[in-house]
Image (tube, rainbow, N blue to C red; front, side):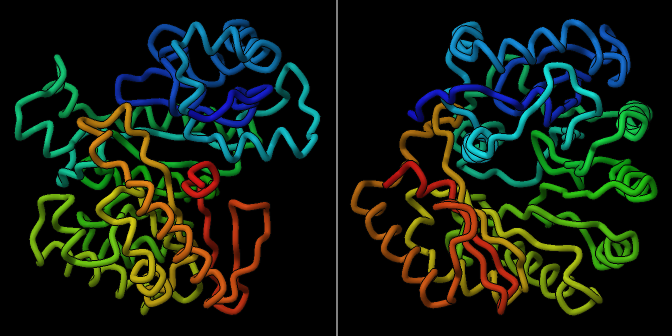
Length: 355
């Protein structure tokens, strides 16, 4: 368990809405409001309710964490928040502009069954151990009208540098996803999309390049076809589709955009494939490799996926061997490394508190 931070400034930097139109202050805590109850995002962002919560997290994080049953101990933004706190940036109690980043969870349906997933683990589904209401949840999507309303509010507030599109499943299953993407770029926002990149075709890729989509966070979480198919209950054709899409993207974009972030949720099944992961990321011209810690308490049988101590030692050794091999330089403390020659960065959340 990570130690609690001295303060949390997410209430000034981040916002989120999900498929049921609930507002969130971050990714790992309960809903703090609702579009239908508290109004549009601009109204809610400037409300007393939101401001009181911001100040509570800034000045009494321990007390708020207790109210949230310790959720802050498993913060998915821990490394970034720690660096923000250490930066010494002065933030006024009342925000003058909107959040720096806003995340839309646009849908819950998914075509993969990743065993490390909170929602779609094949272990959970095969054993018919879905939580109550799961079947209804799995069909939910965010409507286009609400998406447009919220993103227009973000434009009016100012200050938003990045829009993220994600979901409880795969965003590209959502019927209106291409309209959402095109409108977001039309408004001039930087845009990143969390995806397994399996539900797009070559025409879609052409549009991503044309519209100027900035980044795809592609969850691959493997370095070989065997592991990729095993942890997702997929076949070779699915791996080949991923490879074809990534290859087409690299060969047809005129610049480094759209960027590709090679995302790896570190488990006992992929932890020894770090050499292959570096090789594939370089092959596809990825901008980042992102090693992330498995938040096992939210995953069905998640404890069974955690690497052994021996595997972690091997991971640490291989990681730094690759850092040396590809001449990656430390740029932001022990979490970030970068090579100007390869135009490749590595963010290692996993190693930061697993050593």
